[in-house]
Picture 1 (cartoon, rainbow, N blue to C red):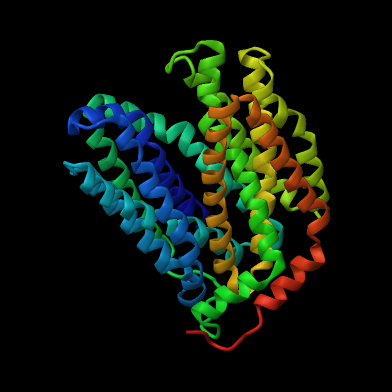
Picture 2 (picture 1 turned 180 degrees about the vertical axis):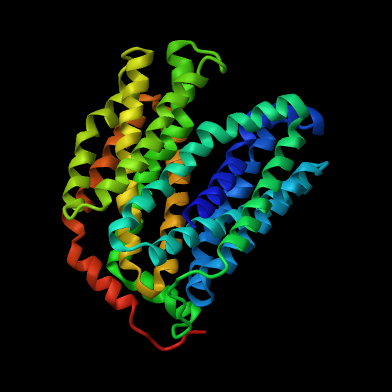
Length: 395
């Protein structure tokens, strides 16, 4: 089961971020500009975030399996449609479809992990899940870029579409029945209201936004920072970025160990304080190419450890509304990336890259405070019991 949802997540992440290296060829073929086509990322990311929030209650009510299969089918069809598109408008429509389908998979898959694995294995399964997007960026996106060079950009989208459909089909046949917490005793809107009314949900949401804000800053601004400060070309920056991206994979796997520890809240707070100096220094100091890459990798490592713990807490607290809570956190994840990218762009435009260090540092401190003072294991346990109780059905 874990391999199946991992394959789905790998493909949807690769399908989202593969646009970057293919944009010049797409622009030339379609007779448009790279900046215009770059907006296609937004056409996928926004519905991804919204769908994650909206689909969570549906997976609680109707089960995880139908939503995962539907998400794979929609994302695969959107990728295949992208491959045959001949205008920006048609491309935008299919990228929206990709975003809707892709958005169904992460919250549903995370909830399925919470349903399936016992407490002692749930944290490590979550770490594997968190490591998968980094693997997709490190392995999947470069392979799709090479395929685009060899056979044209349309072939890359055909490959992603077919892989998504095949992954969905394999999941269908290999997982004929799944354990779960399907419950129709609480209606759709009532379930959303219950999750949003709980302070713990909002604390976890704030943590997701803070952690993912820094993550978005690193993904978007660290490569151009290296190019501008150290005079690298686009091809020369590929290896340093790949090495720093390893922090996302290792951080997810190590985060699974931390998330399974009985003192996980204090350990996460301590880890975040431990990377505070790197959060400040990555963009403030011009210490040399490889020292900069090392600092960014350590920062990313700590962020993904804390992120894994945060997702595990959400799974532990969700009860019969686990899918709804995970959908809220996935929406917060995407929202945090957008906030980090947008606010970071304003700071760089006004004051340069150095200001990103202060923004990253403030976010890391905020997340550490939440871990240390705002969350308790007792509150997690009480939330799980609260969400496992029935309530009047909402409409």
